Length: 167
Ligand SMILES: *[C@@H]1O[C@H](CO)[C@@H](O)[C@H](O)[C@H]1NC(C)=O
Ligand SMILES: *[C@@H]1O[C@H](CO)[C@@H](O)[C@H](O)[C@H]1NC(C)=O
Image (cartoon, rainbow, N blue to C red; front, side, top):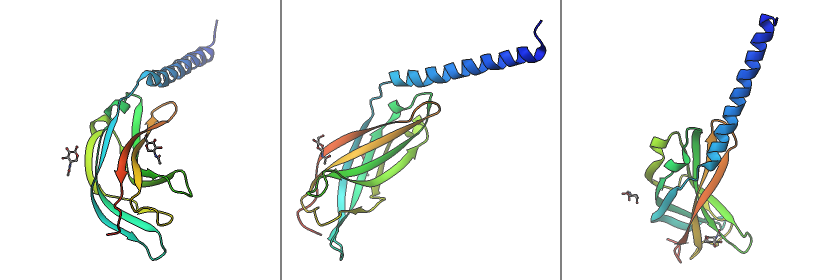
C-alpha cells in the first residue's frame, strides 16, 4: 500500500504536469491567432521646425494616432506595449528610428483608440537632414502574454514628408 505522502506527491506531480500542459497549449493557441491590427497616423500640424544651435534639426508636430489593436488580445494577453516612430534614411544611417509616442494598453477594451497629441519624445536628427525628408511612420507593438513568449510586430505607413523650409 502506498503511503499518504507518496500519494500526495503523485497528485502534486500530476497537477504540475497538467498546469505545464495548459501553459503550453495556451501559448500554442496564441500562435494560431492571426491578428489583423490597423493603424493610421496623421500629421495634423508642424508646430516647429528648426535647426538647433548645435546644428541638429528638430521637429515638433501634432499627431492624430488612431489604431485598432483589439485583435492582438486573446485570453492569454496580459498587456500590449505600443510605440509610434518616424523612420527615415540618411547618408550616414540606412535606418534612423525616432520614437515619438508610446503607451501601454491594459485590455481589449482600450485597444481601439485615437489620440491627438504632440510628439511625447523629441524628434531630433543627428545632423541637418530633415528638410524635405521623406519618412515612414511606424506603429510597433510588443504583446506581453500571461504565459509563453513575448511577440512583436509593426505596421509601416509611408508617404510622409517634412517641409522644405524651417519654420
Ligand atoms: C483622429 O482620427 C480619428 C480616426 O481617423 C478621428 O475619428 C478623430 O476625429 C480624429 N481626431 C482629431 C482631433 O482630429
Ligand atoms: C518606408 O516604407 C517603404 C514601404 O514599406 C519601404 O520600402 C522603405 O524602405 C521604408 N523606409 C525606411 C527608411 O524604412
